[in-house]
View (cartoon, rainbow, N blue to C red):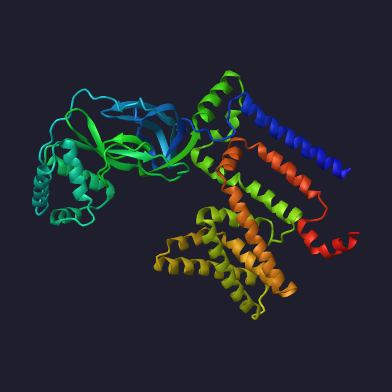
Length: 511
């Protein structure tokens, strides 16, 4: 009766999961594989500040027809704030206001954009005026004009002049003039503004634009400065660090000019963080449009309705059940022994950040050192809880020590040891020492190697980009994973390793 109940439950879960998946594919048009077509980028700006118990006004630039991209959709999350958008010179501004606010405040701006080769920056009514020559202090001024004279003799027009200037300013072995200029470089953004002032010394109109690199999974992104010069016909863009012409395809122009990013009245300490996620064009635009036309609210309750930062978190969390299923198969069907159920999964997650080989080395090193110190603690006859706390402290010290030593040796990958779950490491050391005492070193090493093997397989499964896409877009497939796990829970047959263990007996039974 119990077996029948489990089988029926597994059948129902499988049917529901497959039906929801099939509905999304056939009715909404969601692809089963990442499509190699137009991408849709979800970009979210998270603004945090502290209000001073009074009227608050805040203005923030938002994309205004960025070159190479088109806006598919945008929305604002502002609570009880009033909202207005208006154009100010070359930028489009979002302006929030509220009569009374106090304490920590959160404002969100989210935009869905896609690459559009026909999209261009909005044209300006008149070309900019030639700038006045700035007053440079010495020896800054002498270095600027001397360098400008040299660059002018080696260039033919404004574009070649700018490219030659940037090449000299970013040379690995700068000349005397560039060395003088670099001493006044306090930061990247200010350095680009200094380049604009240097170009003004040659009466060349220039400006700074700020954009966002579209990198999937970004959670704490920041705007990067870029340089533009006007050649009499239009604005030409240059990478201020290399002198390369043009704007990269993955660079979203967010604002133009060197004005403050946020203008705030009635508050203090404003900060902005950008989150980015990439989806296929059909995944968001077509599927949501079909859902609205058919009156379906499936997409309204999908993971795409979450903030972008939360989406990036769930892209990782949703892979954990696949790792758990792998542990079940390897232990119940194959017969590989491991230290617990969740330890291999968490170690596999850490391998996603540390890379597999380096992660195995770091994990083995910490466990080996911690195990030696754990045997020393055994001689002190400590109680269980103080002993576990001591092992945890030792693990933290080992992690810190390995990071410092590896950094001094120039091995930056050693810094990734901090990504390992310290509590799991401490419990692994404690469990391994107990197995060593109760069943011997062979059994302890067998379970340790089994844990590493399962964690390595889990890393392969949980790092698969197609599986990650499939589970995120169709999370109902986890019901199928649950059904398989329930069926595995009723399996009482031989494990694969037991056929090897009892091979002599099986050979005797043969006629």
